[in-house]
Image 1 (spheres, helix red, strand yellow):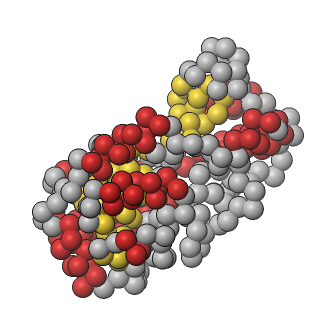
Image 2 (cartoon, one colour):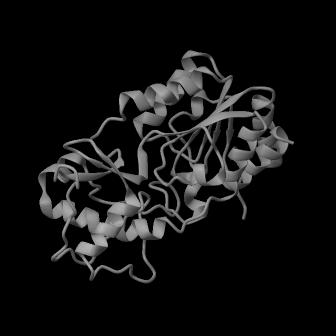
Amino acid sequence: MDTGASEEQIDGAAAVLEGRRTAVLTGAGISTDSGIPAYRGAGARTRANPMTIQTYLGDEAARRRYWVGGHLGWRTFTSVQPNSGHRALATMERAGAVTGVVTQNVDGLHLGAGSTRVVEIHGTMRRVLCLDCRQIFDRRDVGMRIEELNPWITVPENIVMNPDGDVAPESTDGFVIPPCTVCGGMLKPDVVFFGEYVPADRFRISESLVHASDALLVAGTSLTVNSGIRVIERARRRGLPIVLVNQEPTRADAWADAVVRGGTSEVLSGLAARLAG
């Protein structure tokens, strides 16, 4: 596949990162080669009405739709595998070239690829949280309860998945959302919805990762979401070199020491070959 990136561009990015301990920020674009669509750019599937925390809390019908679509998509999500871009970052971490990954993704693919220092800044689809007592549940256990309460629910063939692992359900008639088994309260996937803030302690961990690094590599994000821009601002304040890898222009192109306009799988693999032997 033609990434649009030349060997000279990848060489230039590698020269910026050479000999530096690099923190990494990733977005949805790194997971597209695993079959998960991005929010923006070529091939993206834009949703006109993304779920907000206000709608989730205040509209029971919308909450049912979310859980039906989320469950069907999550079942497909669990079969998705890391791609060569994820594996390249894990290789660079093992070689000492990468200090860790701050990801805006909720798919868990960095951990699946072998990265050990991963900050999932927007949360993860692997966990479910009770909004009342704050108990945390494994998504697999909640999935089993959903299927026990709704034995009619099946994963359709040729499912069309959204970036957060949900689908557009045809019907939610009769769907029962399982309550918290501890207090009977409202459950919510442990992900940051539109209208929510990234938890302060989670962002502090991402800041610490940047502070412990000598450079920042940004891959697969247009940086439309403010949490990504905040991470870059922390790197800029410290005067760290910044390398951007993305198919489309980003909000931070003017701040970067090197911009590689190409696909993350091929470009990150090229960087790993240069920086991790």
